[in-house]
Image (cartoon, rainbow, N blue to C red; front, side, top):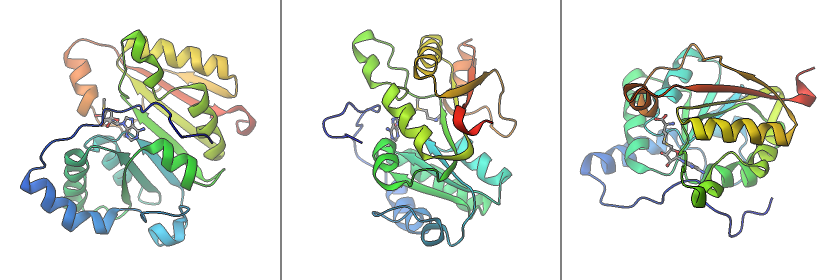
Length: 223
Ligand SMILES: C[S@@+](CC[C@H](N)C(=O)[O-])C[C@H]1O[C@@H](n2cnc3c(N)ncnc32)[C@H](O)[C@@H]1O
């Protein structure tokens, strides 16, 4: 996949890290980070071969933590670029004693494109992605024809993409991109029972916004 010069779906936030964030990353990241490079091989990365779920843009990890707790037989790889949020997720993973939550700090699109084998993921989760509401920024949205191709290629047979957004404009964008892509069977309106109301979802609900839920299964694997 051509990833050179592509537009990023995240804000490259910088700023001083707190002492707590630095300490958490130094002590906890070595226990939870996937290998820094090379193809992602479950046996090497997780010490077992089990269904692998990738969450793109996990923020402080409320959904990732809940999924890992509810699915001890799966390995959840939570990806974000934002250090304080990842550090908070790792601290909570330690508090809960979760051994099946893994992290990668970086661009999830590059991870998917360069290091994840085709047909290898049980699911891809994208919850409350940055909506990039201005027309001039719409090309930064994670959901695009190219990224849908990438996700479809990396999902194992029977795998699925879950996406939720509280931004009606983004929901319309997801609907039209999935329809134009044509390679997924799409169900709307099913909220995953394990997902807590937290993070950006809580903010959206407090502001009176509705949540749109998408479940997309590559048509070739949905039978
Ligand atoms: C609006 S926040 C939502 C966070 C979390 N999912 C929640 O619901 O609270 C979107 C997150 O996605 C991350 N993000 C966006 N594009 C990304 C990418 N390509 N790779 C990794 N993280 C990404 C951003 O850094 C940000 O933390």
